[in-house]
Length: 432
Image (cartoon, rainbow, N blue to C red):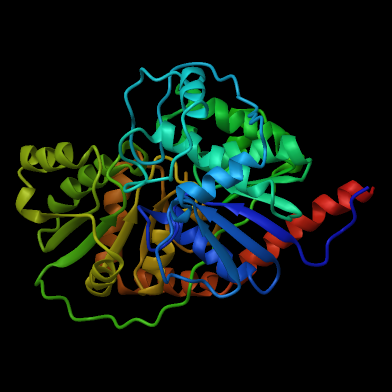
């Protein structure tokens, strides 16, 4: 019988990891790893590591660093390679950021990849090209490597890493913890029952614990994936404290900002609709939509059709330095997401003293209770809140003060301790 561990040896799987990131997933994975390091021994396996990028007390393994000879040695140690091929239904699409053609079948893809010759794992862009193949190759190699490691618990971040987590659970009997930062339900809605959804569901069913990044996401796991609520343990993300300087804006107008992927999930059309209403009464405002995505061009066309194109800046993707420059001169932050598991960008805005307007369908609404919260479809109220945040200093001050108080508990240290508590709850259950 397993016993409770004082210091867990954690085998962790991630897809994004700084400096190779595309969004919040990599930032969150790094934040948790750094905060976990005093509490557990963490070996992090990722697709791509960068030379000389080290995290104190974290053993970082990038599959791209294995040579052909090293891979052959790994696979030669086990003469007959086997893999519990999941049987998924439906055609494939992938997330979290875009889609691939829906003509790839998971069973055929498994067969093709698992019978290829062993070769070095090469990946330039995590989400470009044949992502399904990359995900399966990642699982194939990382499982073979991991079977020769010592660990107490398997911890996998989002669907791209669920395959090795499931396989190792089946082959070693070690407990599996899934960290759910985003779901296919968030990305594509409840009618998208494709193989990514099926993978998520089967992994959740197999897992010992599921850590969604909010109670909101936990309810999605329960209601839309049919998962037992007793093994769902929500843990809010944290954020690193930053020192910032609010700068004088170079613009005469007030600046209202939106940043993130410009996709259906993030609700950019509601931001444009609200801006149109604001500008009917308040001309001294400009709006910034920072980010890229499949709805970028439609949003540009929409502002032109409304005759407000001169009031919008579309910046494209901004790196961290440029984003901080934007936050330093902005007046109001908006996050009208249709479905947002957490929403670290809202917390970043709070760190810069910005009043925040966020959707009720977001995890961060649980943590930033002082924010102005909207139903995304209610663009009238959305517009009213923007005007109020711009014009009423007392309201702005109360929102900022309430959110600053909330920041005290939104730390990676709190997050890491709660994750360790989740690990320990597994050992306590095994002892019972």
